[in-house]
Length: 514
Image (tube, rainbow, N blue to C red):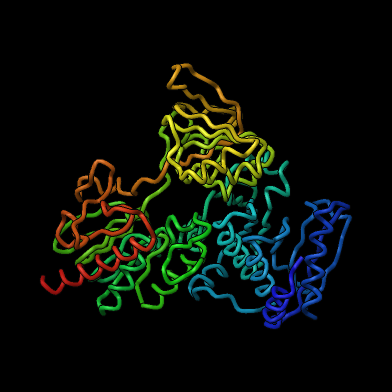
């Protein structure tokens, strides 16, 4: 399964094991069990510290395996053949189980060790999901550090019956002690905030006690990261408030238009940005969501958690989110058949009927990806023609299991037993209403700026974008803005980073003059 180059890399990593590891695999006579066993035997052959034990009489999921130290259960299990994006999760679990010290904030490690109670986590993933590994790795870390915590990663495509029984239509989906805890990307700090309420209150008090900043950046995408780095390099007291790092890049598989890099991945580039922000000594407040901005000599920023900070200047870089249709049933079935990332959630719809709504590049690319997984894809575009690049349209039209409907106005998502079962649309050429039966709907109609909380504070245009001048200044003195949430044309990563740098330099100039 593993090529020679990858084996050589793994062998070097596994030399870091400080303790022996026992991998116990539950198998049956299926091809997937043989594939999992082959992978684990290849890992075993790379290190004398790894032992593989096969069991066929276990009553649980098959194939699956558990990592332990001899005589000690670390609580990490994989009901999956952890390849694709989860291969890194697998390697990190090997290293951490084998005693290699984890790379984590010492305060976070101490918080995990001090958690009281029993926590059994289950995470449903797809191996093509870029956002799943962060959740898996966070929960594996928690399981290694605290004997009262266990975690099993479950590949929804490998166990489709269980995924269907639990109504898993989006990944990552996390269950805690049998009850659903969350859906979507989460950091270890966000997970801890959900299960350790006492620590959340301590964090609120800690943040609120901070002295006023020279500049606070709000956001975690490329614009925010660039602004934070440029501000910190000017030697001024810089803070950053964000729910997480990466923004829309976390849903971007391949990035090929960054001038200094031939190619990278969204998740990888996001991690590099975060690392650079940390290296510059920026005071990062995460996971925190800004909900109110109060202008004044010192600008006040209030957060959803209850924390409050003040700053002489603020740089707004909240980015954008997937645009929703705003129709009946849509919000009700998000994560239950309504999805926004074909690459992440597509494998959960294997051999099912799905629809893609939209006519641009993102919609056509999603339809092409889904055509290779699902039984049939119907693309519904509201206009009388698609706006996607011709080369993509031609590729889509050649696929035998794709139907294209233009002049189609979708107005309702329907469902039954907490899952999508279809949609209603109107043919704008005939004015006839149609009911399309399906199990998944992928909404691909662009992005909308995350600025609703700023309405009435800074000037926004009709699209909700923050109006800025060529110095990134907003309508409020001392408040600047950058990135996809602004009126700056062409929403691109490289442009957002340039906006962030401009905003930081303008904020610094404002501080000098005031």
